[in-house]
Length: 144
Image 1: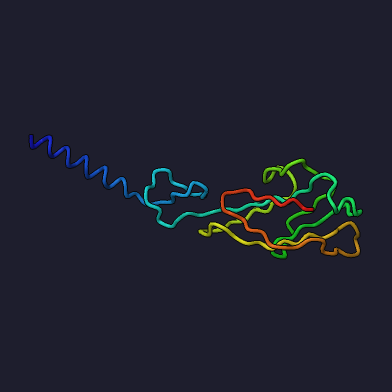
Image 2 (image 1 turned 90 degrees about the vertical axis):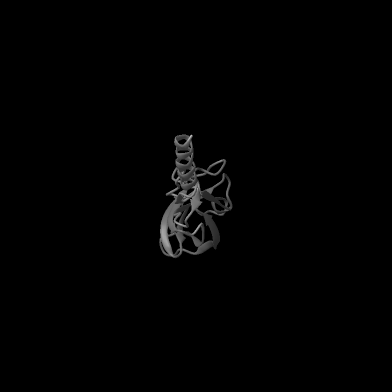
C-alpha cells in the first residue's frame, strides 16, 4: 500500500509541476511554446502589411502610373498602379509588403506615405495616414 501511495504522490507532483511550465502561450507569436501553460511575457512578434491596388483605382484613372510607398519615412517599395488584384494578396505574394519586428509589443502603429512617382522631377504625396499592425497577422491596405 505504501508503494502505491508513494507512486501516486510522485505522479501528482510531476503533473502539478508540468502545469506551471512558463513560456509564450500566444499562438501568433514567433516563439509560441505549445507546451507552456503559464505565459511569462516572453512572446515576440513580427508584423506585416501589404499595400495593393484594386482594378480601376482612382490613381490609375487620374493618370498616375507609378507610386512609391514609405513607412515611417523609409522607402519600402514602388509599384505600377496597373498592378491590380481582385482581393487583397497575401503578404509577400503581391503588392508591396512591409515587415517589422515588434519585440514583445502585440501591435504597432505605422505612418505611411504614398507618392506619385510618375514624373521624375517631383513626388507629390497622394495619400498618407496611419495603420495599426497586429503581430502575427498580415494586414492589408487597398490604395484607393
